[in-house]
Amino acid sequence: KLPPQELSDFLCQTVLVKGTAAMGTILFFTFEGVSCFISQASLDNGQCLNTSIASVVLSGYVVILTTLSACNKAVPMSVQREMAWELASIASLKGLKWWQRIQGGFMIITAIISLFLLSWLGIEADENSTVFNVGMMGLGSILFAGVINMTMLVRTRNEHERNLTSTKLPPTQRSARGFSASDIEENAVALALV
Image (cartoon, rainbow, N blue to C red; front, top):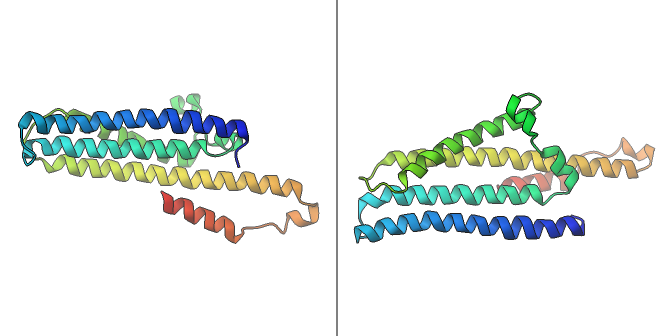
């Protein structure tokens, strides 16, 4: 349902450029794990397990963030403007919506965990379950942030569509318009995709 210009921008900027950048980052993380195994000359060495776990979890974060970014750009500009975070609001923490505060908290947790995992990328140490446990906490955090983002994105898009249709309906039919099965189905599909 995107206009042709917005569709072109979405395909070029979001899918092609950001997708390529994400692939480069994932390759970097993969090569860190591979180089550890090559330097140890063994695939069953426990010293490289921490690096491998950190690289897999960080690659998962990149995939999730790239997917969320693509979903946010796959809606019309009017919805994108309403979902956008203003830099002044972020700096002062005033004027943020409730869901933006919660999502921001989860993203801060994920960022801190990402820094911890990045510090483990080059370390050849004995196997440590802390890396896996912390990585899973970060994965849960980024998934919660993604669910919040997708829920609010679908809700905002549906409100915009309802507003557009209610302005096109005659005044007698505007009040009769309510939730339809397709609205519920779209919300369920978006939640299942996340």
